Length: 216
Image 1 (cartoon, helix red, strand yellow):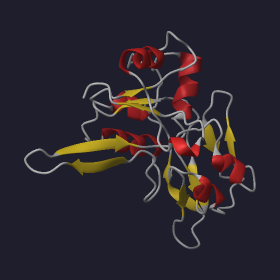
Image 2 (cartoon, rainbow, N blue to C red):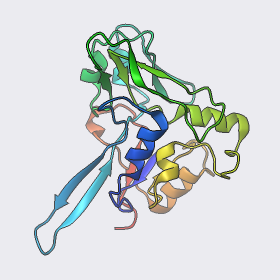
Image 3 (cartoon, helix red, strand yellow):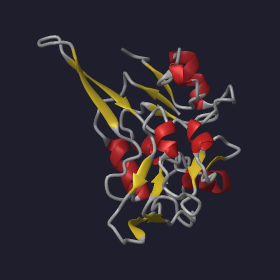
Image 4 (cartoon, one colour):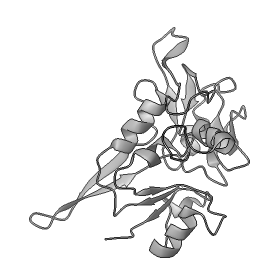
């Protein structure tokens, strides 16, 4: 994913779209937007930084997990397995981006309140319960990606099955695609608006969320 920070208007549509799409429980938010006031009146402005899991090539969370509950798919998406997770928080401590969340719920509660059904992706098989005491994280809306690969455009919407945050952004500051394909939308955007940076480059995780400041 590529995020053009200069286009972000801080509306929070991405955050809410993610919450709605995944029905994440409680205080679990996969896609928050960090706000910062820069400068002083009358020359002050607000800067916005959308953040999410970076789906790292060399993911510290995968290395740290004692039960192999975290894994990377062939397409690079990093997922967490509730059934294998024991809630050790080792992955949370290892992640330099704060992108992992422990669903604590109520004492004695067995399942989370949300059931993820992905209403914009029919028959995607994405329905999910959230188990208390397990790690939750952004999935790049893997259920939508899988649906798109199998069925192409979402019926009736004429849009690819990309992450909900990308589809919802009114400023179109999020670009998603195959960065290894030189003709993909993300590769073309990088050529036109680059160069790109990543958060915490010192962590050397091979982050797959890139940032540009393409219009300011």
